[in-house]
Image 1 (tube, rainbow, N blue to C red):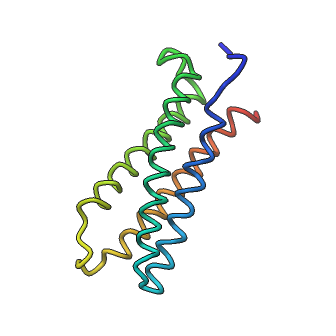
Image 2: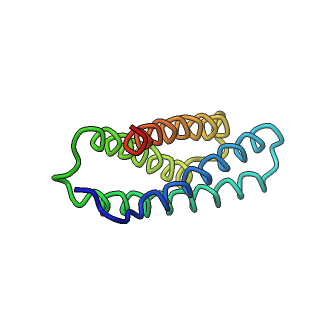
Length: 132
């Protein structure tokens, strides 16, 4: 069933932008070791995570329930759940990770890079729904 107006596409660009901003800020934090990059990255992560949840809720509403999550929508849905899982684990790392650990900075950067790759893949699957 195709709905006349969908809201999911309106919201999906916010987490994409904020997660990319977070990745860039973490890179500068790793290289320059300035604490304000870390603080701004955390701020970007929080906004990205919050907007990701809103985008996922909007996507679920737009699909009109679990019974309509089939085919390409299912692939996009599973990919989005993978993104949600990784970023939820990252939220725990932001909260409970110890800054004094040896590879704390690099771990943040690598997890953010992996998250951005998964976000791009999810976006690709979403684009396949719209453009094919």
